[in-house]
Image (cartoon, rainbow, N blue to C red):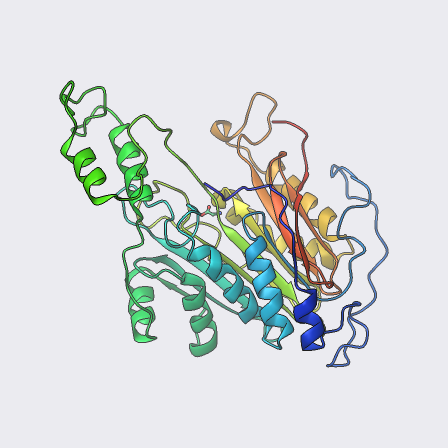
Length: 394
Ligand code: GLY
């Protein structure tokens, strides 16, 4: 699973920028001649939200793309596309496509972990700052790139959210190709999960008499014979994810766009929809303020209007990191169900959130250490940074 990678990754797009004549030094002098408003002074943190001091991204100005930690390739690609003049809302869709197409990311698109019936169901949303319009799909089957379908909802319909069979029929009508989204690895992981449930008719490895002692199984024989890629065996751990990719961008004119795409909670009840396609939960933007998005336990982000809260906190003058921490504090304070709290009364799950202000300042925060975010800054350099944790430990 690569949805929570914290390995630093750096790539330079300077040569591209030099070739394309993109300004490297912030928003001033943008082609559209609409420099974003000066950043507000840094206010004191609201009650109960720890003031973690100055953070990476506070002082950044100019074009920028931010994503969850699994998205350094996505931010680099989105920045490249945006620098060529493409709208930020379309650029982020081009960026996340790389992760949707990647069979090794088990939280998004092709290779995403399926629902409890072994069927991959994808959620995605996109928002366009200048028109404040959004498009989204939920529970979409058989289409590898739900973010691109969400963009078509935004651009070619009067609606915001299409679900299930209606979303699939719309995607077909728009010319998207249907394909099997299970990889051999995600199918094998689902089988291991299904067989581990116990107390039903699916036999787990201990309950089975196969393969026979000293015998090679037919499956192993065929795998060797066909030289197939290795599929995880029975003894390997069962993966689990709420993983997702979020990506937001601001261009030199201060226009913002935002996108989140996911296969959602692994082994979910068919039809379960997370925060990712919910405008204001998994992503949100306002062109006068900035953009935000989330990854992690979707149910908690929905009931706390996660991404909307972050943008509102930025509108009140908080830095992107402060705004993220304030939204996470709201989630922690509103986690009241006993089964979701640990012995310290804190959430027993993690969530990460990301924010990008109109002037280019950016930041990311998580409930507990472990989250990370990718960013491509105005100099075209891509890096992965740790999110600032609200709490130091669970
Ligand atoms: N954040 C992704 C989900 O809960 O579906």
